[in-house]
Image 1 (cartoon, rainbow, N blue to C red):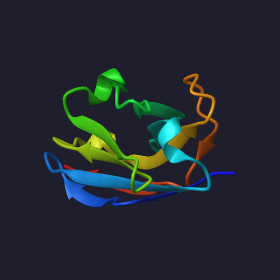
Image 2: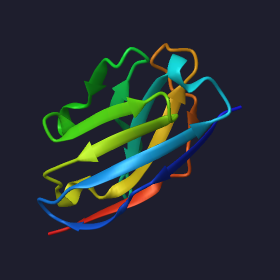
Image 3: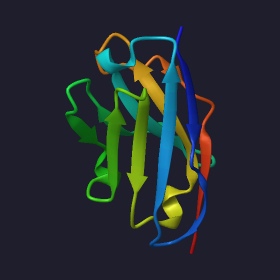
Length: 118
């Protein structure tokens, strides 16, 4: 069983930045692929960024160059630094874990709301 708890969301103006955090517990965190997803109002949940246990990262096209995912295995934390935020980035952001390391995420946290005003 793994528990994921997100924090760091809030209200920010367009062009601003936020840093999301995700605290993981219940498993050997460092072994697993971690990711961030988001769900905008009226839309399906979509993948935003992922980071493998070795630190390699990959991103959805809509966040490339603006968002950076990172992890601190010693602290069981994963982060999403979001810069140059746009109103269309408004969504609930979810932390996720893939214990199979296959690219298929199976568990998510409760999410943290990010609202970007124009």
